[in-house]
Structures are given as C-alpha cells and as structure tokens.
Length: 82
Image (cartoon, rainbow, N blue to C red; front, side):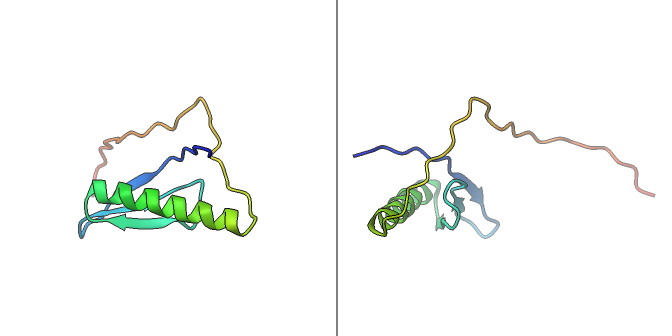
C-alpha cells in the first residue's frame, strides 16, 4: 500500500456547492453541495482514477513536491472612470 498526497482546489460556485479540481490529475473534476461532501467526492474520485490507472497498467502520477508554495492574494486597485 502507498499513500499519495495531492493538492485539491475547492471553488465555491455561485449556485452553491463546490467544484473540485486536482491539478496533478487532469480530468478529475467533481462537485459537492458542502465542503465536507466535496472533500469526500474528491477522495473517491482520486481513488477511483488511480485504481483505474493501476488496472490499466498505467503509471499513477505523483504530485511534484516543491518547497515553494503559491501565494494567493487579493489586491484592491483604484482606477478613475471617465
């Protein structure tokens, strides 16, 4: 057994719920009505995807670990309207 770690993004949707993407595993997109449900769906989607790759004899991608994490900020910009 091997434990894999993946970064997962939870994007709040206007209509409610969260869309989930896994950058290291393109093609995985799932959804949950709550953040907890979205997490559960992400775990299930990643597990199913990786098990399918193993079954097909394909390599399971591992996320590249870097010491530098992206920085996310919100910037306020003042502009003049004519």
